[in-house]
Image (cartoon, rainbow, N blue to C red; front, side, top):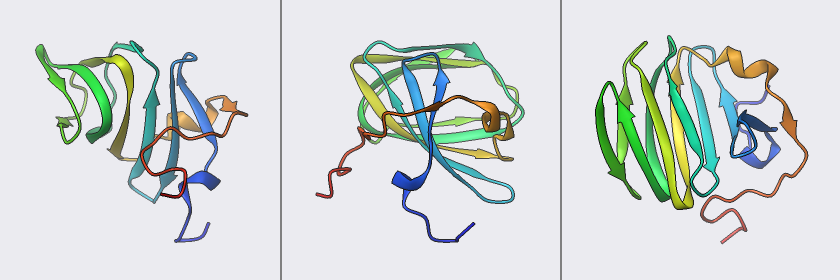
Length: 127
């Protein structure tokens, strides 16, 4: 794999049903993902070994981490330590976020690939 990759060349993965999809680039110990959430998409409470950090690029999310709930808009960030329970609901206009995980999210290796490759993140039209 090249060390220089355009995110558009990464497969679009179906992460949570039809409403949450992501593209990722992986290193040996870290995953970087651009995640797109449909309006009102729900990611139910779950946990994983990977630590996770992220930032909202567009839209809004209601995030709950280990019992603490907050609404986050563009620039809002989160830190999820290993195995902390967390869940999220996207706002009425959906959201686009960047998520970073360590170690890599190898469990995403078997996720279905979506044929629709149109990204929703800001500036994805070349502007």
